[in-house]
Length: 157
Image (tube, rainbow, N blue to C red; front, side, top):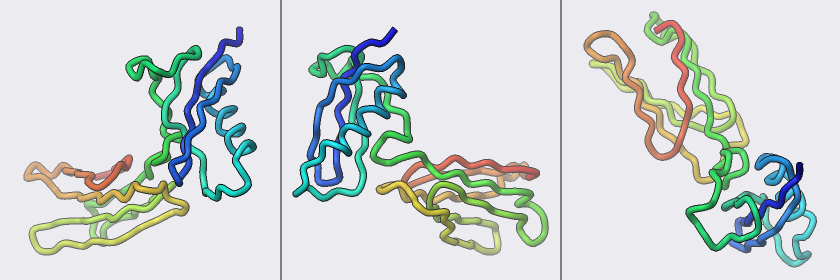
């Protein structure tokens, strides 16, 4: 059964529209609201991308505590990049792969530090993570992400 959802969309220029759409799920409501916001933009307003600020089931957006969490793919930052490290403990460093974004990757050992920027454009605006990987005394990886969000997968460490 379809129910009303109230979705507030924002633009890079910080214009906002509050739309009410009929949908069965939050995901469907967000997709419809973003599509409608793109279609309804004023011709004199130039912006790159529409994103979702907040969403409520029903039609009363005055209660901020009643807002539903917005999935990353609809948010202003977008989904975080995924960093995959395959066998980083092996001689030569193994393999590193980044998907859905840009990260600074820093490997630290007792003898040296290597920092490199890796990307798989387009990266989410405002998300510029620095991923630092150290080996703990027990040999396990110690991973720190600062300056944004990233998902880090370590395989065969």
